[in-house]
Amino acid sequence: MTLVKICGVSEVTHARAAAALGADFVGMVFAPSRRQVTLGQAKRIASGLRKDGEPAPDARDADSLEEELTRRRPLLVGVFADQDADTINAICDDVGLDLVQLSGSEPWEVCAHIRRPIFKCMKVRDGETAEQLMMHVHAGAIVLLDPYVEGTYGGTGKTLDWSVASEIAKQTPTVLAGGLTPKNIGKAVRVVSPWAVDVSSGVETDGAKDVDKIRGFIAAAKGSEA
Image: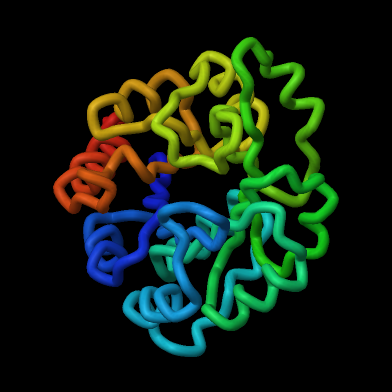
């Protein structure tokens, strides 16, 4: 079954709602964004979802993360962009993050310096082929596909070419992002067959997370294979 990440969460109530509704990952943004959280907000969300002292998963691939999810969920993802590895690792330890998402222009090699499992964002430009994109995929992280929009790190509501994403998902575990909503997620999962899907603006109303939309998104994403 497709895994679901609800991203851009900044309120404990929304994080708990996502968890109760079946989210596998809850994402908090530490990169410059209108959804950026402070360390205080992030700690409150983390403490609202789990017991103190739970260790971060010792995992680097999709299979081991799925095994971790059988023991506890949701896992907490910190979204970073063009920040140094020492800063990322320190925030992970301070907040208690389980995974890191790199959404900037970081070289793939930086993954080796991060002490958490990683989603490495690849910005897909119009006209790029799966073959071209796969040339940049290396070991050490799970690929997250997001459409390229100049001047932003994500959360734009723009979709990418799902046929390209489908070809990549056949070759490596893939997280599909970009323009996903409760209305189109079922089709996206059927077309792409991603390992996981990632949504932020698609479950918001007037810039704030909408619990009804989160409910509809998770139900449609996880029910589309039925």
